[in-house]
Image (cartoon, rainbow, N blue to C red; front, side):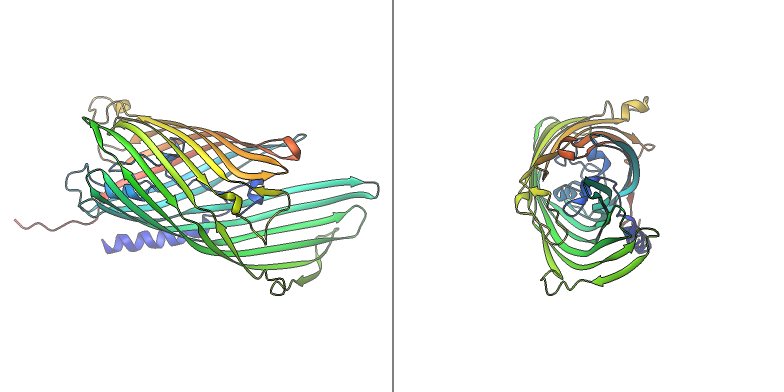
Length: 428
């Protein structure tokens, strides 16, 4: 048992370095980067909702769901569920005059959940929280020539989390997650003027870390037979992140790119050496109805006070923030999860739709995201484990006001595996 836990922890620590740089979106230029979907493939393919929970899958969005682990499984004490997901995202970036394509493959999450018996469960894992990866060119022409600004950025934040959930009484569960977020955000602006031998650069780097907490309350009473009402409320508290900043400015040779002069900016004098990033609280309300392991339909509404957010060190003049909100709808159907004659009847079919009002207003235009999701849950043998495949089609942004419309296709692969690590010895 101890050996398995040590191997898992070492593996999680090893892959943490690679959980960043997971985007090529131009909108990762703003804020703390492109925020990632903090849920498993199963939840992502139902529009990203987290209100549904069962006894054999982890719900990374809903810590109260850990209290359900193993509740439908005989001899549930000692049951361990471990899950991992990767994705490939194909981008098509289109402005009013040009179009480009790109793609990125990332590890989305790795997590373990433990059933400790009597409605108590816990888990931990790692996932990317945000990613930065952009390369933008802004060219302006006037009577004296052309001015070119090249903006590049990379990095992102990784999230390590620990969750615990407990079923207080039948069908009523509470849960909490503590998240530690850390990483580096790097940006650079190169500026050059036509027929001028030297250009200038402005490099900025922020090392960020800090905590936030996610609290959840779920109520899932039986209504008729195995049919249940699913309801939840989740509050992700304000993220209080501390940013340690550095900045260099200087000049370079346009001919060969070599640095001519570099100066370290005194950020202490500007009161920018250490700054705070406050990620506003997000509240999510969820409601659904379904039959255990057979079918489910649910919806969620989230809202966040993004109008109070600012990044004083890496902020851009062209963006403002207003309160954000999200609407999501998701369904799944499993024709016969216990069928002995047909594998296809044991497959789970999922679908969903979501609309995110991100709260970003760039060049006085709201940046929204719309996505359609669908996928399959493929049983592995006769066990509770399964392979999950997911697909998402979406669009973010617009070509209005010199902006970029981002169309994407995302392919997800996730594993949800169940094992028993904690076994009591039995003496006959």
